[in-house]
Length: 443
Image 1 (cartoon, rainbow, N blue to C red):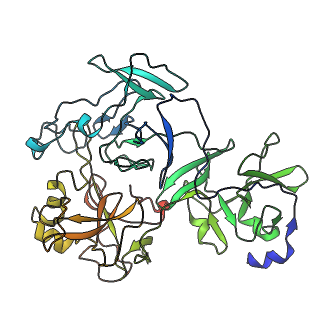
Image 2 (spheres, rainbow, N blue to C red; image 1 turned 90 degrees about the vertical axis):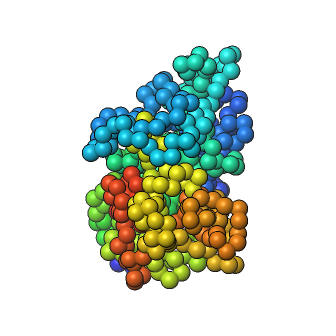
Image 3 (cartoon, rainbow, N blue to C red; image 1 turned 180 degrees about the vertical axis):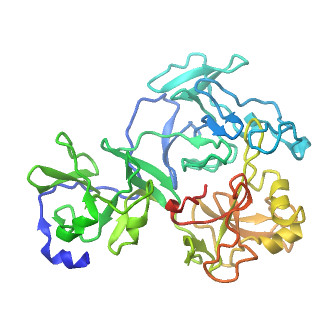
């Protein structure tokens, strides 16, 4: 129905600038000289220290039995090794012993604080807070800042994510970054497939393949389902953003040469349902990194999922401890006790049967920062440098292995989705959904 409108397009004046559409533009704001901006694959621009290490905050997060994270201006991450649960997640009480106490690391061993010099000068949102030992720590927007030992290269964001998480999840660490270069009324959300443009009311923004910066083809009947994103009277074109006049006095926003719309049938915040209509797509300020060529996309009863070459759904493991410092336990360098208990009652052989790793092909190589091949000892679940008979070359997403489910028999099966504690939020596995509006997004 929409393609029929192309031949009756309306020609409009435009002065769209030449742009780089591969990464997200950001606003330069005042910052201390020791920090700079790194462009990351999935989380867009982030602040980093002089070594390129991403800066993270640990925002306060409401759990079932209290709050975890840090109140503004108050560091809570210290060098004590926590050995018992905090009781934040009912029905578990506080005081239960945590696993492998002799191997446990403190919060600061995993999350080194970003210390400030005694003569550090505050600027803009960058302030200095005092730790209880008297040392000074940088804060941004009043949140104390840390780096992650999981990040090894400039632009890594392995320690945390700007992607939203639910109330049953632990208090994740979140990378900080400069504001996106957006006109008032717009926002950017991190999703599984990229940095998605929305309105500040969480409405998804779309573009039509038949439009250009000078020609609009969504007219007449098309406007029954699609609303142009109208610019206010004082709006001005700048950078990647332009304006076109649809009718006298009515100007529509244009981003990277495409007029913008919302979909009247979207019912959820930052939905992607409008992209199901031929010719229409969500708008992204930055696309997510490509997954390996051998992977496929399969339709399931709940939407599109990422799958292996045979169509079997790919799953990611999530784990966060019910400790006062809310440390993650989903990385191969973390304790494997939680994962082994969940997938095979503590038996590694049963885990390999029920939740096998996704083995990388002999000729496959790592694709990017997000999708890498790592070597795992299947008996321990830990990283190993040994590539002999007792190790496995497996695919990982953000340095965490990905899995298949033994109970999936046909392409598109998602029988393992939400396995584990609190529907896989606290300790379990979730399918790799390619549509965040199914409310099943992953880290």
